[in-house]
Image (cartoon, rainbow, N blue to C red):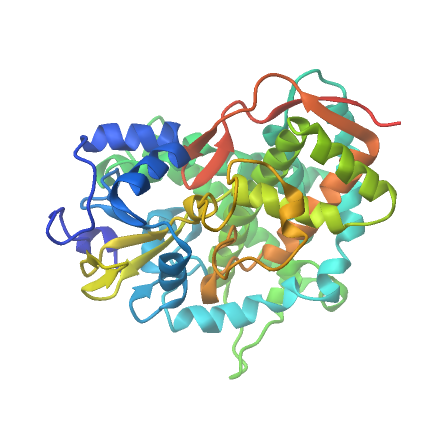
Length: 445
C-alpha cells in the first residue's frame, strides 16, 4: 500500500479550508485534551468545514462537521477514498486488512468477511457473551468507585478470543489475552503517531522495537491458531469467525491465505474490542450521572422490553461516540461545503461534532435517550460506526455485546456517580472518559 503521508500536500492556506493560527503543537494538545470542545470552537469560528493543523499530518486534516458534508465524505467514493487514509494503522493491522484496503479490493474483502456477522450467526453468540459477563461481574461489583473502561476492555477482549478466534483452552486464552492486551495498549500503539524514523526498531528498549516485538508475538500466536484450525476435523461444525473465514470463498472460488487472515484478524481485534469497551464505559457512566434516564431504563428492562435500551445506546453513541471520526483522502482537487480540498489531503467525517449540532439535535449536550424513540434522525446526522460501504463491519457484534453487558449489569446493580461527570479525552482515534468512567455500583433489588 502506498504511504499516504508521503503524498500528503504541505500546508497552504489558499488550498485548504480555514484553520486556526495557533502552532501545530498547541492545536494537537487541545485536540487531545478537549477534542469535542476545541472542534466546536473551530466550527463556530469557521463554519462546518475547517482545517486542523495537528500531528501527524504534514499539511492539515480537513474536517467535515455537519450532516451534508459528513455524508459527502462517507459516501462520495469518487472524491473521498478509503484505505490509504488508514495508513497510520497499517503497521498494526497490516496493509491487507479491510481497514486499509482501497477500492475496489475493499468490496471483495468485505463480501468475504460479512457472513459471520449477520443473522442467526450473531444471535448464537448471545449466551457466550452472557457467560463471560457473569464471570467478570464479581470484579466489577467488589470495588467502590470502579473505572469501567479497564473492566470492559478485559471483557470485550475475552469476547474476541472466544467469538472471533474460537479459543476455549484456559491456558491458550490466557496466553492470547496477555499478548493482545500488551500489543493493543494505547501506550504501545502511540508509536504509530511518532515520526517515521522513531518508529524503527532500535532494539527491545526502543518504542519501535517494543512495538515490533509485541506485534510479532501476536502474529506468531495467530499463525499457530490458523494452522491448527485448518487441520481441525470439526472445523465445519464450529461457529467462531476464524473457522468460518477459513471456509469463505469469493465468486471465483478463492479463499483467504494465511497472510490475509492474519491482517483481517488483527483488524477485527483492534477495531472491535477497544471501541466496544469504550461504548460500554460511556453508557454506564452517563447513566450514573442521569438517574431519571437510568431508573427509566431499569424499569423498562424489568418489564421485559429492550426499547429504551437500544435508545440509550444510541444516545450514548451520539453524545460520546467511541470513535472520533472516519478518515478518507481526497482523490483529486475538489471542494467540500464550498471550501477547497487539495488532492491527497486527509479528510475526516467528524461525526463526533455532527452529533452535537443544535440544528439536528435540540439541547445537544443533554443526555436524553427518549429522543431516539420517535422518528428516524436526518440521514448522516448519527453515524457512530461510520457510514457508506466502509461502515464498521463488526457493528452487529458490538451491538450484541453492548446490549448484553448492559442488560446483565443493570439486572444486578445500579450505577451511581463516583465523582463528577468525566470529560472526553482523545487517545489515538478513540474518545475515552478521562478517568476511565468511574461509577459506584449498588445492588439492584
